[in-house]
Length: 121
Image 1 (cartoon, rainbow, N blue to C red):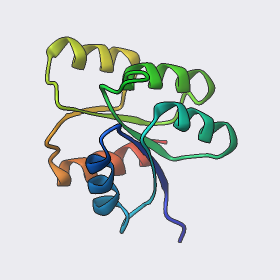
Image 2 (tube, rainbow, N blue to C red):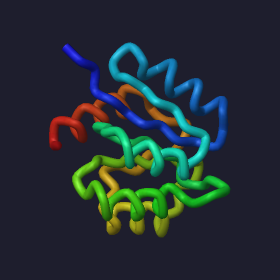
Image 3 (tube, rainbow, N blue to C red):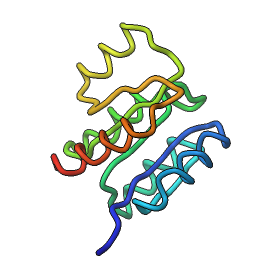
């Protein structure tokens, strides 16, 4: 059985390595340090889910979601953030983000959210 492909984007290399280490047994993980590279990747290849940091230098995770949503409206998107501001969380869900999780992330909850998001699609 082929593993589902998850794109992970975070400008913090340690976070990328950690997520890749945690998820690689269950999914095909492709890690990016730049949201622009995620957009480029999706022009040529498919993915089953995106996990993105919220705050990055080139664009926020919400802005990345908005750009991807125009081409791939059904691609599930999970935001991971160190910020738990109600306005950020509300904005994310209003935009159509599948899940907003505050770091440090509860790994069992993340795995459940990934599974539900992928099954929903």
